[in-house]
Amino acid sequence: MPTGAGDHEAVLDDLFETLAGLAPEIRASLPGRRVKSDETNPSGETRLEADAYADELIEDALREVDGIGTYASEEQAEPIDIGDGELSVACDPLDGSSNIKPNSPMGTIVAVYEGDLPGDGDSLVPAAFVLFGPILTMSVARDGRLYEANVNDGEIDVIDDDVTLPEEPTVYGMGGRVPDWTEGFAAFIDEVEQEYKLRYGGAMVADVNQVLTYGGIFSYPALQSSPNGKLRLQFEGIPMAYITECAGGVSSDGGQSILEVEATGLHQRVPVHLGNEQLIDRVETHLAGD
Ligand code: P6P
Image (cartoon, rainbow, N blue to C red; front, side, top):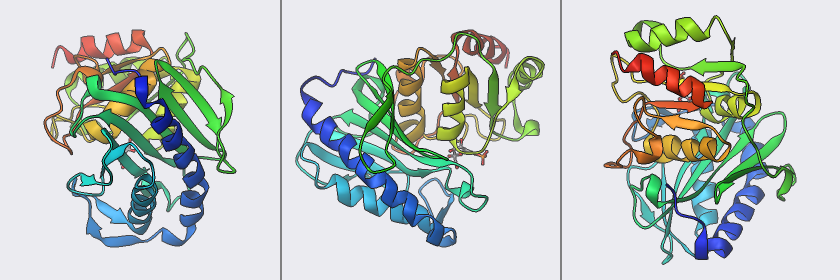
């Protein structure tokens, strides 16, 4: 399990105040950067100008946070030294950036690890995401609790200091193409689509926030063409798993908590299932038959 904030409290306070202050600026940068760049990120995905700009803004801002020694992002091949602190930040600067074109929600994911990268669940300290939705919010999982704050004016205005998944699930969302699903996952979806409402918008932070709000499950599963799925362990899987578990939910790579997955590479992918325990149990049972 992740370590507590311990003696990193002051660094983490500074980090999240900095991220809150940056959120309105990142949001304001989006309208003029809806175009694709001619570059791809280390995962081979086309990079939008907005991805590169958000990455630059965050990297520059974190250089000013004492105690952060290393910065890594989905947009850069390797971690970079940004100070002499013992904490490392792994960031998805603009998760779901392809949603800019249809003006749909997207966000920023931040994971803070003790020591070098790649880090795993045991070295994770807190995790957070900013959600660029109708309301600009930042959700922070720290010391086993998840809080949600309005950051519209760059300040942290807590609106829920103990976000908890509803007992009764109501929504489900899943990525990947139907023909590419495994038999076990397809059988699971055949069941849940009879019971719950489909909520999938193509940005992990927004889709997981639906589950945190209404209860249910978000999956980006192992695919026949990609046994480790699509999402990155460092930048998406581990932080969003910790956030979900701090809200009383459960995470799984299909067989174990994502916080137990061994980190072997900065951009390694991991199958992701996040949500209410009873639904995670059911999907794991179906996947066991694959
Ligand atoms: P697809 C966005 O590109 C992302 O990394 C996650 O935010 C999201 O859950 C997933 O990929 C969407 O993937 O294949 O549905 O476009």
